[in-house]
Image 1 (cartoon, rainbow, N blue to C red):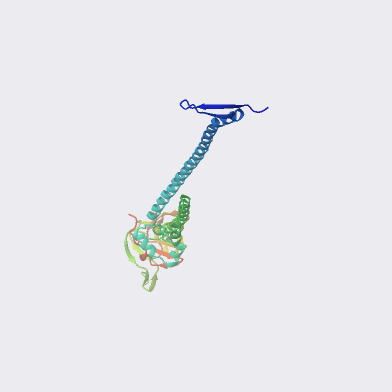
Image 2 (cartoon, one colour):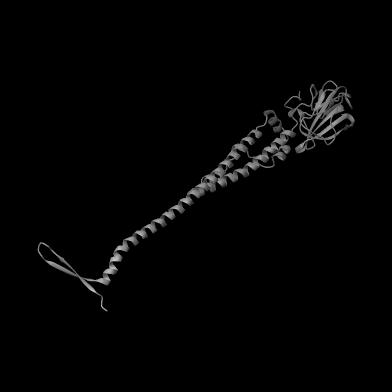
Length: 311
């Protein structure tokens, strides 16, 4: 059955002219909904496209927020590390600053003793950055925050490694300072020096191995450095003798004591009372005979004694 057709007539009321158009009903019924629905579909498409773009923007915003949070966390972590390193550097700087008199005594130690304490080239907190390695790290081309954080992490890790070496050097320096005999072992007056002299009993030429410090009997005798009591016993011409063993091959001897205040194996610190002045052994009067040995060799105590005995 053929499709029904209709005729649409348009008449001009002034001139009476008529114009007619044939209309296919089936085509009309197809075109009208299309004309009506097409804008709606276009609008829905635009809406869906906008919704998709909005979703992408939201996802991008979430990613940026997360990235920003990560950067904040990383920045906080790096800041904390930097502050921690600054504290360590300040602490090591203070510890590395020796008393001038103590530093002077260390400088007068035999080279062998100082080399034992050094254990390699020392690095001070002041020159931590003065190396080609740090210069090359700081000169690295930075193109993104990730690059910056990566370089900072590398720099901080290198600093931590360097600080570990500095701490070791400072600790060894502190240990050497503690082991260096640097105070007078007793209050009194110097009655005998290190080196050649006439024997006080026989008058014959001889060599005096240490210092004689004359004082009243019973005056305290002090350890001149940190160490361990190696022996505290009667020893021939030395009479009552205390021998202290210090680190780095240093040792000290205290002779002619009237009594002991320490026992073998006891740990002592600089200034600990180890005995009392006396005249035991081969002595003409109350005094302390004091010796310093470095790697088993006698050295002149006067070159290390920079401070008076403990008050």
